[in-house]
Amino acid sequence: MKKIAILGSTGSIGTQALDVIRHNRDKYKVTALSCARSLDLLRSQIREFEPLFVSVASEEDARQLSREFRDIVFFCGDDGLTEIASMKESDMVLNSLMGMRGLEPTLAAIEAGKDIAFANKETLVTGGELVMDAVAANGVKLLPVDSEHSAIFQCLQGNKDNKIKRIILTASGGPFRGYSLEQLSEVTLEQALAHPNWSMGDKITIDSATMLNKGLEVIEAKWLFDVPLDKIQVVVHPQSVLHSAVEFEDCSVIGQMGNPDMRVPIAYAFSYPERLDLSDTVESLDLFALDEGLTFHKPDTEVFRTVKMAYEACEKGGSYPVVLNGANEVLVDLFLRNKIKFIDIQNTLEKLLWEHDPVYNMTLEQILEEDHKIRELTIKTIEEMV
Ligand code: MN
Image (cartoon, rainbow, N blue to C red; front, side, top):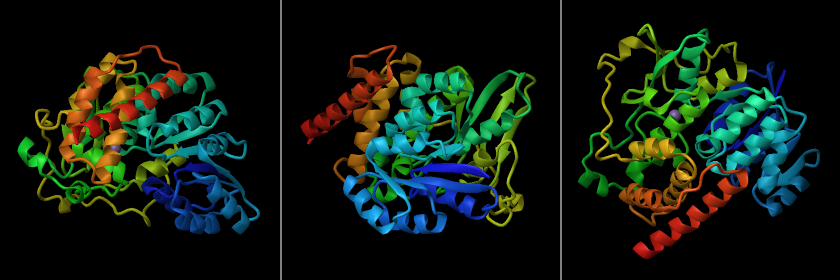
């Protein structure tokens, strides 16, 4: 029995992870759940999975819930996340938090010796070096749940001593693939939230539409697989069937394919190095249904400038990726609340990224401080704009 704590249990990854566990009760036990605000869904998850510990955002909610569920210990806030990430009752932590608030709980879990099923790219974008150093120092596994990174990880199995020539990181291109800059200036929130292939949380769906999601994934891949940026190639593949691929020095390209269903990479992270039987849960890939073919295109970096921004921010290092991520978290939130236009995200990111005073060789405290500073500056910049 593997005992798993789930950070972010009511989000898209969290609910799909619980579905994997629901179908494999003999293999997995939920020790802890955390959610910010979706309390009704949380209540039903508590009843179904009977965790020992639960963390929520506010103290008031924690108090209310502990009156309803007397056998469960409740925590709240960022401390609560760190608490349930590091408790001795779990073997593994699924980090499906949204945003870089997952950094501290991730470090706490690693230091407590937990393997991590990892679905929180912002944490590696901002604290990649700290996290990978902690992983090495504590001998734990960081198992990617992001579909592309799970694909790459799967392609690398059995190739420990073989050099990676190139990572082919596929991107759907999002709902605005093929748009001109003018068209991109007119798009609505509703259109941006309608992702063609994947059903995901709001933040990542908007990141997919701006294509910064792919930029963040380039940085995530660099840290996870220890490859230089010039060996990571972004390829637009609108069908989302090839989830990513690795080319080795003999020019063999090994890819991982399947219907786009996040339960596959979640299950692989849970069961690694074995594979679960998901035949009753996930639809098999029908190649004959793909009679329109699989297509591959260069990303349009003139219209979607975010991918290039991510490469450059990562190349420069230090606070650049922290600024890119922190500003983006704020801008996406503003866009989701209809406060700014879609195109403002990319334009403001560009401005903030290149105008900030960089800091290098940052400690955790400095990363958190730079993140805090850029969030305030982003809000100020937007206020001055309107
Ligand atoms: Mn992804």
